[in-house]
Length: 223
Image (cartoon, rainbow, N blue to C red):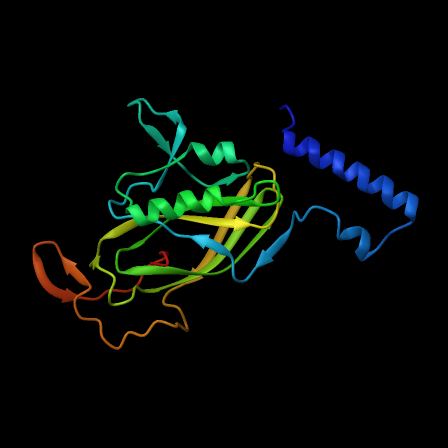
């Protein structure tokens, strides 16, 4: 496989750093501080969580088409360039607000120093995910979450499922090779800042105005 431009630049940068360190005799924390941040973790990560109420994929690959000449859905991926980000399409069923949020998130990422990790997920319509942390190392990304009810002023449909796309902005210029990923979480969240004193009508069944509420799932989003 031909090395990517990012990989070549990274190798060249490491060679220069090594030469300088050898000449100056620098070692320890000072020398390590100039190395690329290829491993790390954040407990308050920057992440957007758009949802598709139809249950279909949120993100599509504009660079490829399937047998029906439609874009393929996006799986887990490390987005490492603005060119690749431009190829990601948001499904038409996703709300305008979420579509704008995704586009802005991708456009505002500095791909020389940051990487976007994309992961699909699913949740019941009346629930959302709270992301607790994300960690990364070469070829692998993991995150931790819990799920809770959405606020009372958010409309949802009882017992229906929606699709999510989780987009994390990682403060590291990673290679696009992804060999593994993982997530762990629980439901409901043990603590929450959302107050549920009144939940009276945010959950409905199509054709029925009866108010319902629901909780219990393995994933969700933040809105």
